[in-house]
Amino acid sequence: LFLAMHYTSDTMTAFSSVTHICRDVNYGWIIRYMHANGASMFFICLFMHIGRGLYYGSYTFLETWNIGVILLLATMATAFMGYVL
Image 1 (cartoon, rainbow, N blue to C red):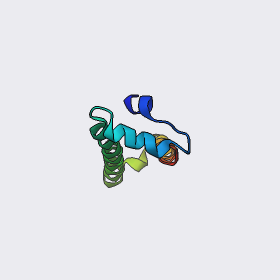
Image 2: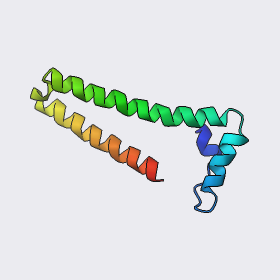
Image 3: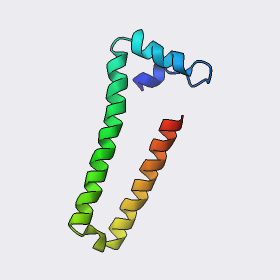
Image 4: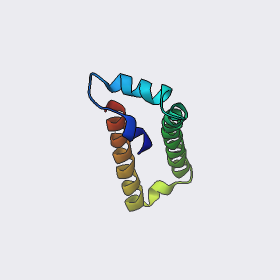
């Protein structure tokens, strides 16, 4: 929410609003980088969780595994939309 208060999604002013967040907002630069690195860490933990499930054979519980795959695809779609927008 904090980043959204200062961000403008207009194509002409989007870059300048990111520059404004990094330079003019108090601790805006650290919040922006924590947001970016936090998203990367979320996906690292997600892929480690999938790897653990593959290692321990959790895919034998088909209903649970299918729900996890659906959640993975929904998370990837949400991340893609956040990256594109």
